[in-house]
Image (cartoon, rainbow, N blue to C red; front, side, top):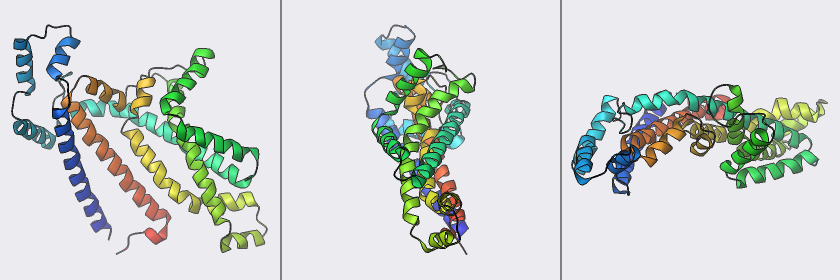
Length: 311
C-alpha cells in the first residue's frame, strides 16, 4: 500500500539521519584541528592559552562530549541545527540561503546530462556501427576516467582563458552557468548514453518491435516512440542519483568555478572546523538525497505499471 510505503520510507529517513548525524558528530570530535585556534588565527588574533580557553568555552567545546551531543540534538529538534562558529547565524538559515545557487547548478547539470544521454544514446542505437558510436565510446571512457576537476580546468582553459567565451567564476548570469553545468553533466551523460544504447538494442529483438517493423515503421521511429520509454527506465534511477548528489552540492565543481552554493560553503566550514555547519550539511544533504530517491521511486512506479504500489 502507498501509505505503508511512505511510512517505511519515513522511518528509514529518521534512522539514517540519526545514524549519520551521530557518526558525523563523533568523527568531528576525534579528528585533528581546534576550531578555536583556527578562528583566532584566521582573524589574526593571538592564540594564547587564556584566549583559546575563553573561545572554547564560548563555543561550548569545554563541555563533556555527551553534553555537546545533547546540545546538538536539542538544536536539531528546535529547527536551528546549531549556530555557525564563523557567522554566528543558525546553520539551517545558512544552508537554505545557499540552496538556490546549488539547485540552479544541479538543474542545469541534470539538463546537460539528460540531453547528452538521449542524443548520444538514441543516435548510437540508430547508427550502431557508425562514427558516432565510436566517438561515444571514447567520450564515455573519458567521462568515467577523468576526474571532474580536470574536465573543469580544460573548459576554463579553452572557453575562458584561450577564447574568452564564458566567465570562469561567480554567479551573475546564464553565462556563468554554462561551464560548471557542462563539467557536471557531460561525463556521466556520455556514460549513461552507452547504457541507454545497450538497453535499446537489447529490446530490438522483442515481439512488439518485430510487429512494428512488420507495419513498415522506420528504425528511428521504433527506437524513439516505442523503445525509448522502456529503455530509459533504468537510466531514470541513475539520473535521480546523480541529481541527488548535485543537490547536495558538487564540492569540486563549485570550488573550481567559485559557485556560491552548498558545496563551496561546506568546504570553507571543513577548513574552519565549523562543526555545526558540517553536521547540519550532512543531515541536509541526506534529506535531499533520500527525498529525491523517494520521488524517483514514485515516478518509476508510475511509468512502469508492473511496479506500481496497489492496495
